[in-house]
Length: 168
Image (cartoon, rainbow, N blue to C red; front, top):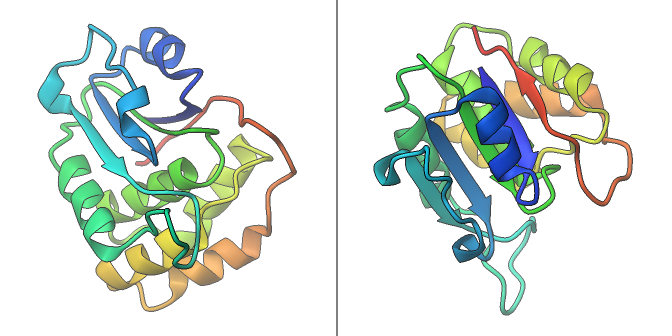
């Protein structure tokens, strides 16, 4: 099970679901304090901003970020939930949840996963650049992008509500 939330909901989400692994994907990763119940080696912090093109003073998502995330989630044994969060719980975290579900289920239909995310969160708006990079890294041949297009943009929100998806 993958739980997705904002930075503000991180500790409550980890406590509520009993997660053993956390993937933090946001600009100022040092703001994400690790809950005491999660071992340090089970918390991956990847610093990137929620942008889709280069901008001075910001870190644009890149292939190395996707590879770091994929390497980390592949170490997760799935016996307890994984929490993925960004600052607002809307864009980087939902893109990361999408790529995680695709990576860990290589034969599962991308559109099915994207629609599961949309059903769980009306505000989910996966970062398009992260999805593009993950699609290439996973050899999905554009199917992740088409799946993203099929769910359309999420409802406007300042912060997403925590949600979960079953990745099996």
